Image 1 (spheres, rainbow, N blue to C red):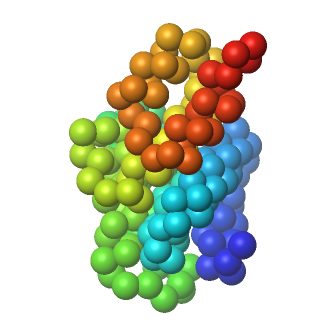
Image 2 (cartoon, rainbow, N blue to C red; image 1 turned 90 degrees about the horizontal axis):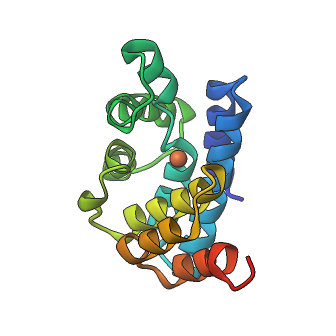
Amino acid sequence: MRADIARIMRGMIDYNSPDTARINHALKVHGFARLIGLSERVSETELFTVEACGLLHDIGIHEAERKHGSNSGKYQEIEGPPIAGKMLAASGIPMEERTADRIKFIIGNHHSYKKIDGKDFQILVEADFLVNIFEDGMKRPAIEAIRESIFKTAAGKSLLETMYLKNGV
Ligand SMILES: [Fe+2]
């Protein structure tokens, strides 16, 4: 793992402590985002973007609950980007402004599937579903509907199939 991603990972764990469920969720989404990114041979910058988004995509949850009394997607999307921006700045990781902006854009829209406008965004959404299907105990008809409406990358579709849709699973 790259040292800069390790720093963001540690920052996410510290920020979410002691909420172990959310720490684990972010680590799992990061793992799938990295796997899909590597399988799809995205650029270095895109890989950094999908890994950072995997770790930070839900970073607005606590602030949404504190400020709005709700962890709904809408409030997470509002609260997440400024927190992620501060964490990226505090990490001291050198990155182009447009990379930080892209990470914040994906975090701020990651429940708005109609806004998916690039492979990095697509990969983050697929990785989040691969984790949420398990965490939310979704059933086969819902999973099949998600496969048709959301999944696009070959690696993401293959993981979805292998983990949730193979016969007998
Ligand atoms: Fe998530």
